[in-house]
Length: 273
Ligand SMILES: NC(=O)c1ccc[n+]([C@@H]2O[C@H](COP(=O)([O-])OP(=O)(O)OC[C@H]3O[C@@H](n4cnc5c(N)ncnc54)[C@H](O)[C@@H]3O)[C@@H](O)[C@H]2O)c1
Image: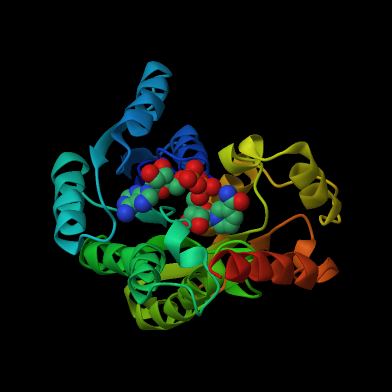
């Protein structure tokens, strides 16, 4: 069986970013009509234009994933335009700088903003699509977590670890709850992705990252997109409530580096006096 999304309709959040754009491109390339969403309209419009130029059936719309009413309106617009929703890829997320502090320095408000983006965002998406998916006889929801979902974040702080870990609980629970609607719910956990962040990092950091990966290379946006496409497809028809780690073997090899973590913590505490 080959993966085909012919006649499928998908929504991708964070589609202006590295993993989201690759995911939108992969789903559309396999036949889906795709609604691309993000808060960064400049990036979103550029991705959408290049896909439209290639003849793919896509449109884009601004969507802040933490705004449930806006998510409902987006889903409504997709149903009106194309007749339903089959796939939701919850990709939007990332670090909130102020929440990456050691716990005793982190503002509680920054913690809340991080959870809002990385955990409440995917929940808003699930709530918004479940009705239309049930009406269509089923669907698939795939959320992007992180290696921090099962270990801990080295640079993102406790808030990112907690939010991304929460994705697993939400995925498990929703997978069970939506099973009778034939809606499967899964998660993909990337390790270190060779994206914009790594491109801006000094070569030492890139080399250090690479050396912690047993397969020897950082994963690519396209490899994460492939995993999302697989879990969204009929090839994964027997999988729900589960997650797939795509990290080049990082988590089976080395634990989070205590040295890096504690050095950064000491530095930050010292900066605060
Ligand atoms: N890059 C990595 O190494 C890595 C590792 C593990 C997990 N992840 C996760 O992968 C996902 C995608 O990350 P990426 O590497 O493509 O990063 P990215 O920064 O390239 O893309 C993230 C996108 O999300 C958008 N976004 C931010 N807040 C939003 C909001 N409130 N509503 C809608 N969109 C919003 C941003 O504008 C951006 O386009 C994130 O959930 C991230 O936590 C990334």
